[in-house]
Length: 113
Image 1: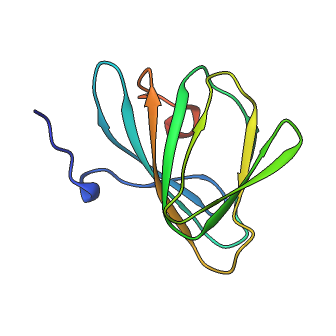
Image 2: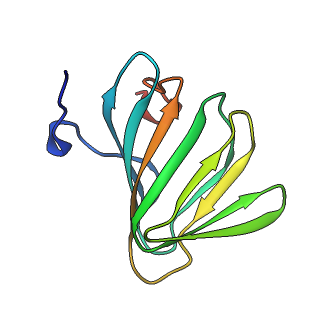
Image 3: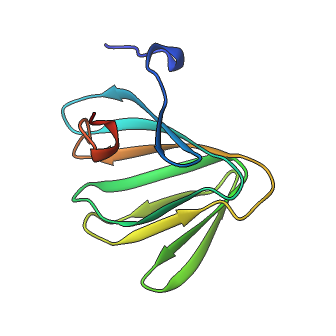
């Protein structure tokens, strides 16, 4: 069993105001922590990985197929692999949560120098 403490990895500001931290990764999935400052947004993108997530704080608005979908603290969600999506924090408080990717997303574009 591998354990990765939250403070073992540095957060990367993937886009302005969006901080992502790679956490544990296994053979079939990986875990990522995210933090969105108020007003921060991730532009539309896609990846082959299925993405499931859980919000612990705040409210995050996803844009999928031209439709806005709101996820609040305590909610979970699934974004199928290959589906274009964007996300934005329209609120006045930070958004925090965890994403799980399958297959593992251990080398995302935002983590590359």
